[in-house]
Image (cartoon, rainbow, N blue to C red; front, side, top):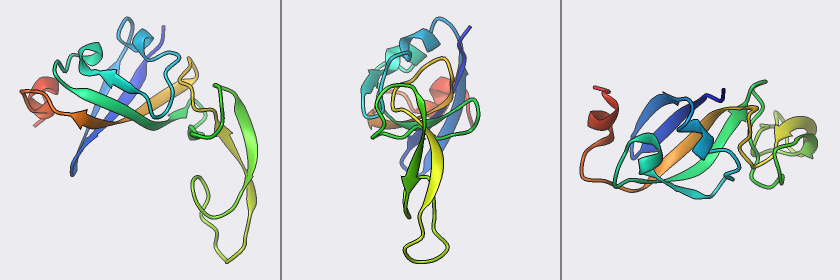
Length: 125
């Protein structure tokens, strides 16, 4: 059974929602940057874009690593590593850009709004 924690960002507000099968099955194989319809998670009229996530070990999904594999990259200051001094580089572990069974959290942003606010649809106050 696959279960994902969705973090949905809309302007200055973020909502968290957990989805399990069969809704979660619609996310398998999707990549960072792809758009999904809100009908998949019960938000009719909305369109969301996948912006990132984390795997079961806490490693971030990286958009420039193909597939769902885990890899170690030598990175400088930026995504996944913040250098303490200028020119510093370090090897860090990342997960690929494809959502798999090992993914735990998926970050989404709203591309197109629906007729009802998200807080009302998901029961948040």
